[in-house]
Amino acid sequence: IGRYRGPHRRAILSMKEHGHRDLRPVLGGVVADAVRTLARWGELPDAPAAHLVPAPTRSTAARRRGGDPVTAIARAAAGRLGPRVHATSLLVTAPSTRDSAGLDARDRARNLSGAISVRRRRARQLVGLRDPGTGCGPVVILLDDVLTTGATAAESIRVLRGAGVTVHTVIVIAAA
Image (cartoon, rainbow, N blue to C red; front, side):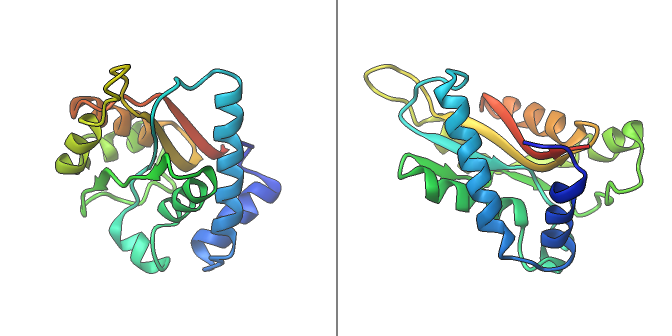
């Protein structure tokens, strides 16, 4: 949605590191606008439902932040997009995963390789949601707050694909 500098960077850091939860619904509105724009441009398939899947956050970081901010943003966006859009937490990060801050691209990829897993039962439920008339499954959008090297998105897509879930697009709030 923007570059990870200036106001985008300040907003994300304020939300993640300084507890400004009031930014979560604001950023959810921005994500909802992005989804609407992609749909209007024809970049998302027509489907009976859509699922915003938050990129995984380490559980220790989520506890420290008073909850997972990416999941909160996904919920806020889904709430603005209507009853056919859901925030669906499918991904979990292993407790042994290190914080990626300060890691280069190779170390980030190595850190995340095999460290993200899928909540299998939820994934099976999602895969089973097919429109009887068209046979189409739901649109799946991976949502992340910051894209630095793409390691989180790549590993998330890989494990989702392994569970039978097709990711149609990735939305990031800020790209480094």
